[in-house]
Image (tube, rainbow, N blue to C red; front, side, top):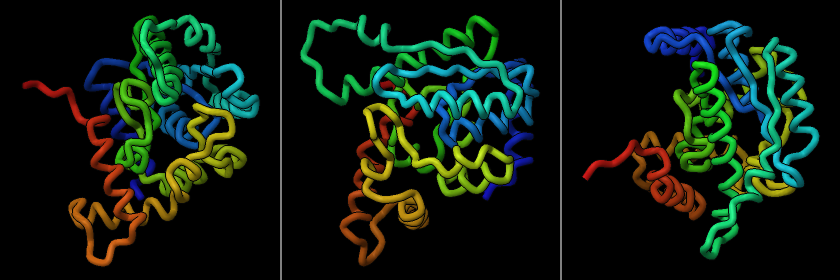
Length: 241
């Protein structure tokens, strides 16, 4: 697991090289955004970090907001809250939409808010996606995968849990069932087909094999590899032809 001091030092260096001192982060009440917040506070100071709480009516749970405020208070970070449903409901497109497109509106509206805040306060946007999510493509392109820097980008999800405990993120956040909260009662495990301990084991195995299929691969391992390749476009840099 990467050393927390190394992550903090690298984040501090990233900001110094770009002549920025302030950062904004979307707080969901989950372990990823909470750990990213803790690292940012250690790197830049709580007075330079802002947390945005961006719930969606009838989708985000009240517990998410409570935990987001709790972790912000613990690390001394000022928060702003903006309910995003009115923005989403105002978007009336003249074409037929499907459930996936509708689900992805929320993270994209949140990213509009985060970058708008960043522009207003001369800050950079901190991403909260971990290495497991990034490889699986478990996120929204130009939504939660949009950021100036991915603070947890080199951490497997299982490492996120361990480091969050070390940096004293509230226990109830660390123990909480991971969810993207794009639908009511949604969980990562139900969508991905396994818990992160199993997924990280498979992803590490695939990575060690240069993302080729190891011998005697299970059907689920093949499904995970297919997901990695199918979603690769979400994290590739802009393509120029």
